[in-house]
Length: 445
Picture 1 (cartoon, rainbow, N blue to C red):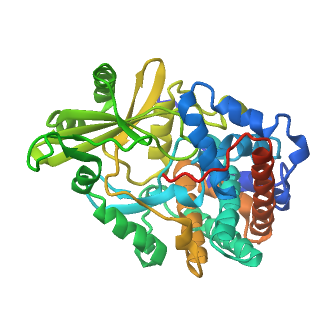
Picture 2 (cartoon, one colour):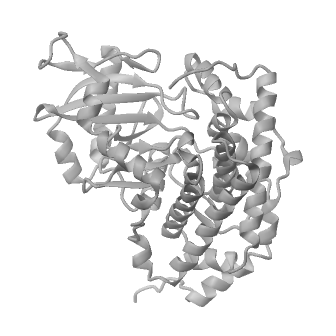
Picture 3 (cartoon, rainbow, N blue to C red):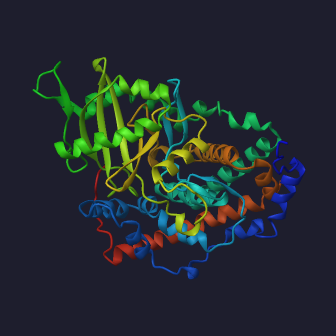
């Protein structure tokens, strides 16, 4: 006999979501309990930096010192701790984990089209769905302040984002599950700031990366090429380290689908460089591998990026059974994205976990200056829609919609939380600068 899996009706799932309101009322999501902090922010940051390259930590601190938003980007461990002491719904989804306005961007899909979606999954993990929304809410307020908006506009941006999320989740709750899985947001190109990122991504081809990151070995055009050094952010590695990186690609190749493995076999590795990336990731090891296929005009660039445990892992000990953090990041990305990098995978080297993906393959991101004027509200709507799609793909939209209901109490509560947490971020930023933890020096990256 075939065993029958436990299955709940749509009505039961919706009612289960409604029942979670007794666990935490929707209006309570406005709360922030800073007094419940058990560990000072500077200690949380120091713990997250263990095992990173000491020579790069000063750079990380300088990047975080540039603005409250810059600090926020590197302070996921602080927010994870703050969220963990608040009451939560217990309704789990795959979290981006670092849902903020600069972690959405354009990239090339497997079929060659350029798409726009959430594109950073270093902190991804299964957890309460509202944690992503609270981090996005705070980021919108901080981004609004930095791009010259008044406080009323920043609050409105959060409410537009969360309102869009709720409305879209109610739509998903009525759709066939298979349609939710393949749902595409077709109107993104009509949003000016997204359209700009898509155009930028169209121009960021492997040939453009070749011109930007490599140079002729002999100094003459047309001959062999290699990575060019741009210290301290981009440096070629030693022969010994290059051999170690190439050896680490072997287990990565084995986990690729056979057709992807075949495509990769057509490319020969030419050179390897070390790259400093992001803000929160500075100090982690990151290697770029330059390949050539059918001659110099057919480049392929892979990135092998060290993945540390998610900042949320200490508070969600049973959320991810995989012990490999590269695998955690890959599986989280695939769960939330409709289309992902065809060369996405993972490996290990020197006792550390790594994510492998294409480098700069038709990628385009937004800048905070892009959010001036009416662009803020338009982009806030995009943020809400894409988060809703990611959560609906990895959770139960009926349960989430049941919890959210049709009213505005959840939206208003997140609007208040976003402002409260942005205020607290600014206080933490100033406090850590006063402590001398972060040197306030301008750094370009």
